[in-house]
Image (cartoon, rainbow, N blue to C red; front, side, top):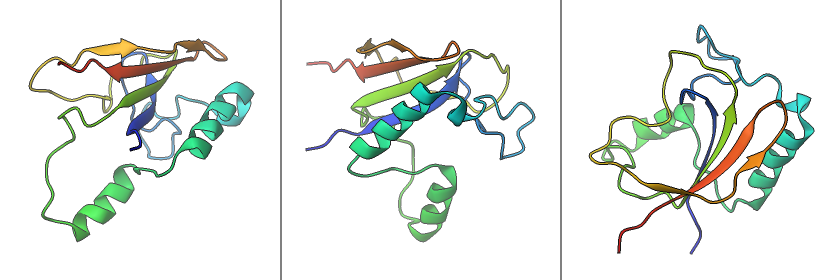
Length: 131
């Protein structure tokens, strides 16, 4: 069975909203151009090539949700096997966060930290599963 992996660009304060700046968010565009960093571009390409399937973002979700109305709720119940974060050295102070409210704390184990370019770090976490 494959793993469910979430890969996100995130600011130091946990914001994931409008990293490329094309959604009109007041402080969007915080990742810069991915082409400016060959290592960061290679990480993104390697992730895409290694994936067997993709779970797409908000716009795709909204399109599918309108056609699949019987589903509801968020995936809070330990359904993700791995979390990969490209953390950019910027504090935005506002915006949609990576995590919303949860029913309990969710301990994670840091597996493979890597320094990339321009102060960006690539962090891989796995949930700590309770026996």
